[in-house]
Image (cartoon, rainbow, N blue to C red):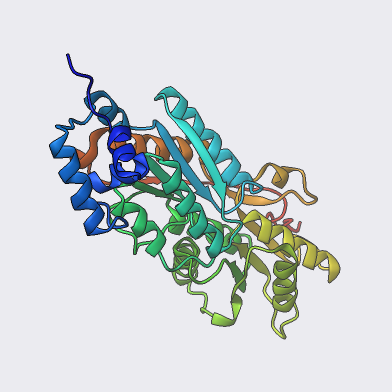
Length: 342
């Protein structure tokens, strides 16, 4: 039996690399039409037949998923990653994680790196100013499925989403402040581009409306995810002629900044200023005063994101993207509980 011709043989005959032969046979746009025709003609003359076993291997799944998050230094994302890895391990998948560090440039680079790594799919939570989603659409064009979680974009279509009911969570937090006697409540929001921040603003406004408390747009301030900037934002709010008596913060980190600002201005918490955050980070119960917060099932969010992505990888076009909504729970601690007068 004659020995089977390989792409190495064709490359040696034409004095080009095997990879060039392979790309020419697949009509890759980077290979000139002239070279493509020459390679295909030579392959036909030599009766070249693709190695079916090798072809099958090249088209098989890598059993690897990518994860892109803003910062693994945040308790939320490190815990979500644990959930992702837990589900992935059960399904026989490996996880590659990367951080955007809240920079759109790094987020774009992360998507390129994921594509080059040959991941079967990507789980993503957006950087703080990520409004252009073209880099994720590029992934989709390469048939790389995407699942969004926590910080999501409504512009990115055909993706599953895993989120909490941010509007209801914010509503409950602000309603709690109102019931504690606050009637001038500020919202320290995340960047205006983030859907999640605006959903929490919706809940904030709904709670004010329910209790007929006038909405004052001066009491909503947007802030980047930086502690010192958040402290300055809180101090500016507390320096108003008619300052707030309650603060609902987008995150526990912003709430901690508000606590720091109150301390610098010698304001008593919660007697003069009640504060509540979002995320229920472990440090919340260790602060003085302890911090009230909206709790999220973070580990389960990560698990669900991985489940949906792997389901889509395995089912292909038969899979229909889903939006999974988790419910939050309000944890009331000292920072928002007003001392009742006798």
